[in-house]
Image 1 (cartoon, rainbow, N blue to C red):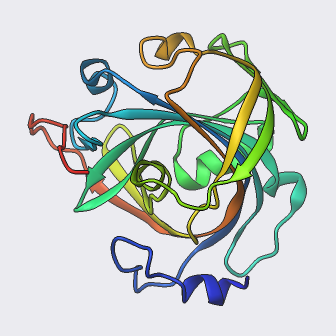
Image 2: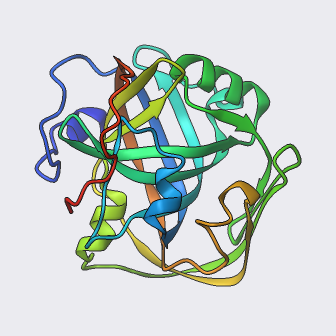
Length: 252
């Protein structure tokens, strides 16, 4: 499907696309989703107070997403695979801001040093380098600095023809929010709905010491997707405030 066709398919979005010109194209391919229902008190310790924690049926979630980033490029330039293609793992939770539901990254790892530096420099997202290896049935990552480890052996199952509301709540997010020292940065994105497949694990070892109270071995829900083609807009910055209002939302 062409970029124009993707942009013209928008009925599944919860709000209208930005009227400004898009800035970047990228593909998030062969994605493994591990979803964990977590404790709200623990999560509130690490989410900026400027963002509301979004809840599904009264519960917050954290997800580990291991995938391959491909063909990332600015709008008017071609992709350069030595930089634009790399394996990535992000750990995210679900938030609300400016009447939009999106994600907030607790961690982002990339498998190529230069790719991480460029992505972090352009987006201000907290990319860091990890040693990542993947094949059709295995995904492995290790980060010695943080003592993080992920090892998955899996097989892909049947396509999920009828997604549940929770399936959509966990995957259909069209904004991301990230904090810096002085601001909350907002990015809008667009893609078609994620195609979802079942996934079976032969091995699942996950150890992120910083998030040990949020992430354990067995996820509450897991999914696999062949991926989506993603259109992204530029960064919108909002200065942080000293307001101490709650960062928990009961919307679904």
